[in-house]
Image (cartoon, rainbow, N blue to C red):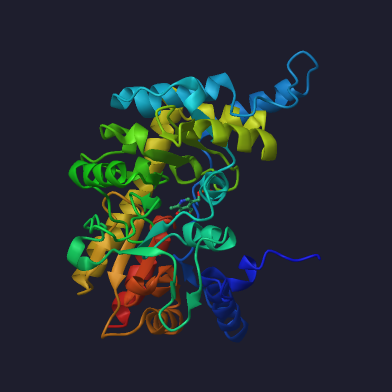
Length: 409
Ligand code: PLP
């Protein structure tokens, strides 16, 4: 008998950004000529770097000539991009990654959502709270979440790792209690979306030790590593032993404005072995079967960010976003808000005013200041009472948002 994947039915409606979009639509319908400042969805606003555009133009021209035209590319990425990734993102940080350990993809959302294909449905999943919703929803779809409790906003089969002000928004490694279950898959994201927290070497090493002890695999989302300015790990593979217990997911979306271009990559070391099988081999098989690679033009564009000009240009763009982060962080602090993040990440995580809930604060800012952010509770119960603003707007928008919030008193 035909049946749908019933796990999809379990997903609660009202997806965070859909609710925000509806509220904005209703507000703008009532106030058609008012200008909203949108610092909600974490999308970039600065155009692609000139070096990237030039590489794309050249690649388009190549595609127009029979002698340089490319059809299907290699499943896991062209040599020129994979080698640039290995040299610049890993070797330059003292990490040796081999050519067949890198898998170029159309972005970190796809990879973080798809990676579960290679793991058993019975695996116990640990996620941070608050969390990037893709890790949760993709595991709901895969049948690993159990049942949703609308009263708590929690899934019965997940292990939640609270990220609170008290622990600096860095999840604490669980204590191992004999007879108690331990997670098999642990999702970590640093620098973090939504809290903007960044993890240090020692804290990350504690997670690597834990994963090795309990035989778990860490899925480490480093989509925001380019925003790190302090002495912090950019890659989990900077931590000794991580190759045997971690998978790293990376993205060019925020690093180089590729949200609309689509490119990222995943790294799985051949040292990551479970049940005698190289996990890398399963991902290779999965990708070769279900994914036909990233288009040549996009991969040329991505490789351009590793050229000297490309590097300078994307650093300048990141610098501009981080200037917005500083404006928002310092300005809101001066206004008396309790503010976190924004130093090694493009997200500002602030405590709402006067004990408002995250959604009350959302409505308050929308209606009173015409500023749009993201309610912290949309990322998980521990996000309640918090609010996220992104640094990806323009400088003018960041300054104006601050001015409007200041006027609220
Ligand atoms: N991972 C995190 C933590 C994110 O915040 C985002 C985007 O907001 C992504 C992944 C998505 O990356 P991509 O655009 O490469 O799919």
